[in-house]
Amino acid sequence: MNTLTPPEYLPEPPSSSPTTRHFRAEKFDFWSFFFSGLTGLATLFIIGILVTILLNIIVNGWSAISWHFVSTIPKKDFFDANTTGVLPMIVGTSFRVIVMTIFVIPVGVITAIYLTEYAANTSNVTRIIRAAVNNLAGVPSIVFGLFGLGFFINFVGKHMDALLHNPTAVWGQPALIWASLTLAVMTLPVVIVATEESLKAIPPGLREASLALGATKLETILKIVLPQALPGIMTGGILAVSRAAGEVAPILFTGVAYYMASLPQHLSDQFMDLGYHVFVLSTQSPNIEQTRPILYATVLVLLILTFALNIVAILIRARVRKKLRALG
Amino acid sequence: MAETLIPKPATSAASGAAAKTATPLIDIDKVSLYYGASKALKSISLKLEEKVVTAFIGPSGCGKSTLLRCLNRMNDLIDNVRIEGSMRIGGHNIYDPNVDVIELRKRVGMVFQKSNPFPKSIYENVAYGLRLHGVKSKADLDARIEESLTASALWDEVKDRLHSSALGLSGGQQQRLCIARAIAIKPEILLMDEPASALDPIATSRVEDLILDLKKEFTIVIVTHNMQQAARISDQTAFFYIGELVEYGATQKIFTNPAQKRTEDYVSGRFG
Image (cartoon, rainbow over all chains, first blue to last red; front, side):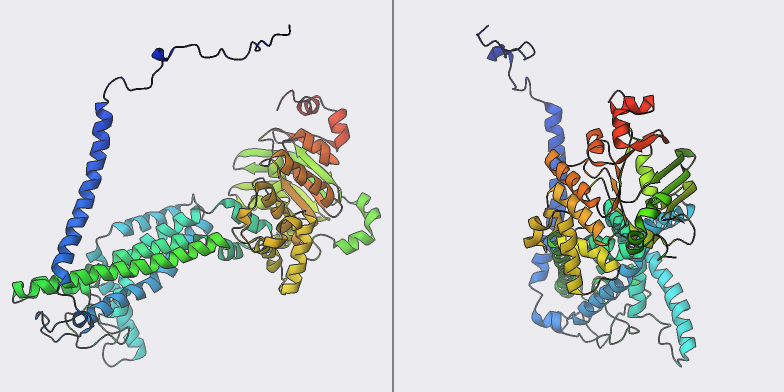
């Protein structure tokens, strides 16, 4: 009785000898090796393409970039590598992206708020709106350009001129505002989807807590939901900027100019654009060999500008995130 | 409408004792609730007294949380919900079309199962409801926040870090912060939906102590899965089973000498 015997329900101590238990694989697992190798190769392939493109542009374009190049308004003959510059294109592209962002963010966010917070999820109206948003994302960008021409310039612009009794066309012609609005329509789905996702990710418990304290739905959305969704909304904005900065087709009929002697001063002015300028340099040049360095340099400037716009947005988002995490 | 929804504490204190027995604070009369076609509550009638802790118990899906959420009209948020019967608080039908739901929710506070502090500072969590209801000055806010954090037994733990994130608090502290947030706007009724079910035993007992303390000032309705908890903290207990109110009475009676066989089986752990 006084010897300590383990109770019966305890498992038997392991008695197996080391030879019966080993964890080494019996044989080489070919398929496992094959698929991990395949996924690795696919990744390498993608990185390879990206590096090739970037290196090609940087190596060929870097030498043609100078302070003179980025700060000069060129003469009409902008194919001469010694005198040309891209200042109006940098300004034009930046402006159209910024004006687009000013329009697309509020409209996209308000639409997303309607879809997630107000519309009944099961109703046909919501379903139709969702389908429309998704299809909008699939429309070719040249179609947006034609839409911009038909709707913004020939309809909205012309009517504005008529209402304002303008003797000559001020708004009823291609302009910075119309190009930006066309881009805003094009990038709307990106912002809507990103905002919807970030709104959905907010725990329902937070909304309930706010409503249970006697907040109205609007107060809950403005004070609890939107601040939390801000980083997600900004992600949508960043995606929209990236998409829009390089697009040429939507602005072709709605605002871009082949050449302008001065920088755009007004929303009703036309503008020059980096992407379109790349197209012009590569198709209209009288001397391709002479134009090639500035073509590369212009592409590089466009890449850097897109990158810079992204970095600024990402930095702002990081600040917002940090602030939300710290306090809110 | 808003002022007359529930008698003000001052008036109810003056005419208190007499009025208390005459009209119960919460009068649920033949309430049925449908989610679409399915009937979740079957003609529930229940009268709850002022400054009493009432526990709703019953197996999952019995409708106790649904009934609780009727009391501050949180069910309004769900599509396809239909409610029949009348539900009166302080003599006023809270489902009357003229009722100001905002005012109702101000008078009938709620604490949820999963603690849900806002991702803001501790201070801002409590200040949120106060600001919504018009408390603006810094001095008033400070005073009310200290008062409610003290009442929820959290003040000593957080007074030195009021402006740090509420998400840094432990689970039990977060739940007590949610209670502080709810009582800051001075509701008369406090609804608690399994407030301690996600907490460890020590945090649970602190929340239970708090409930017993809050009873002096608030009428509390608590949904719980924990029989011992119901027995420890409630004065009255209502037992629900598949949408029906099986038995309602003094907690002691429900747990020691229930009238119904089903209640006895449930509280003694034979089913549920």
